Image 1: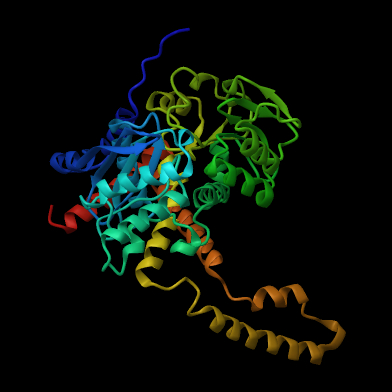
Image 2 (image 1 turned 30 degrees about the vertical axis):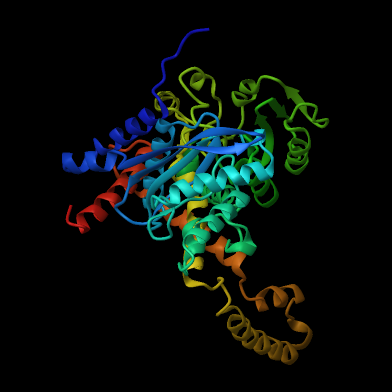
Length: 476
C-alpha cells in the first residue's frame, strides 16, 4: 500500500490557521502571538498500585490567555502526547472565541488506558494528577478550568473537584474549578449530552439555509437523510440518537474500533449502544450487516458523514474515496489539512470541528456560571413564568366559556404552556441560540467574501478576529 505523508495534528491546525490569517490584516507579531502555545506543563508522577509504584505522564497546555480562565478538557488515552495536547488547546482557543464563551484555550491529557485499571485505582491516579496540576494553578476556577474529554467523564471530574476543594478549603467557588461534574455535585442538566446535542443544532441551522444545503448537493430537511456515524461514544451516540428520534434522519452506518454496522433501512441506535456497552464493540450485533473493515463503511454513500472519534480518520489515503457530500466534524481534527483540500475540490461541504463540537464548551460555560452564582438556572423565575402564563390561560378559558363549542383550548396546550422552563430546557435553549448565532456569523463571512470558499476558513477568520480584538483591548 502506498505511503502517504501527513502533517502532524499540530501542523494541521497551524496549516488551517495560516490559510485564514493569509486573508486577514493582522500585524505579524500579533499573528505569531496568537499562533503559539503559551505554555505546556509535563508532569511525571508515581502511584503505588498492585504492590509496586507505577509512573504516569500527563500534560496541561495553555494556548492563549487573552481571556481567563482558560478552558479545555482532560483526556485519558495511551496516544496522548505534547503535540496533540497543544493542538487541542489551540482549537479550544478558536472554539471559545467562535461561540463567544469568555475563555482562553487549554487542554490536558494523561497517557493511560482507563480500561487497564479498576475504579479505585483510577481514582488514586486521577487525584494525584489533579494534585500536581492544582499546586501549579493549572486547575483553578479563575485561571484554568478543565472538563471531560475522551476517556474521562463525570466521575473523574467529581474526583478532581473534590481534590481541589481539599487543597483550597476556603475557596467558596471551588466547584467552578472543573465542569462536566455529576448533577448532584455542582453539575448542570444537559452537560453529558451537550456536544452531541450541539452537533444536532449545528445541522439544524445548516438546513435552515437552502443556499448552503444546495452547496452540498442536497435539498429538503434532515428528514430521511442517510447518516453514517464514525464512533458511537458519548458524542456520536447522542448526535445519532437526537438526529434520528427528533429530526427523522436515518442512521445507516455506525463505525467502531472492531468494524462497522450497515443497514440501508436504518439502525436502531439505542440497541447498538446497548450492545457496545455489553460486548465492547459492534461485532456480533444481530440486526445489521457487520464488516470488520470500518473504512469500507466510512467510504459508503450517504448524505451526512459524522466522524465522532479520533483525529485524522479522513486523510490523504482515503479522502478521494469519501462519498458523503456533507461532513460534520463531531470529533476534533478528524479531517487532515491535505484531505480538506481534496474534499473541497470535490465540492464536499465540511462543517468544521471548532463550530460543530462546541456544544460541550458552551454548556460547560453555563455550568461554570451556575457554580459561580451558587444557584441553579430557573430557580428564581420559573414559578413567576408559570404565574404569568396562567393569567393568559385564564383569559383564554374565559373566552372559551363565552364562545362555547365554536372554540376551545386544547388540554395539551394548557399543560405545556403553564409549565415554566426548568434548568434542562434553559440549557438547551442557550445552546441552540449559541449554535444558531455562531453559524450565522460564519456563513456571513463564507458568503460575504469572495476570497473565502469554505466554512472552515470562515470559522477561523471569525474566531481569530475575536482573539485579535481581545488582545488589542488589552493594549497588545
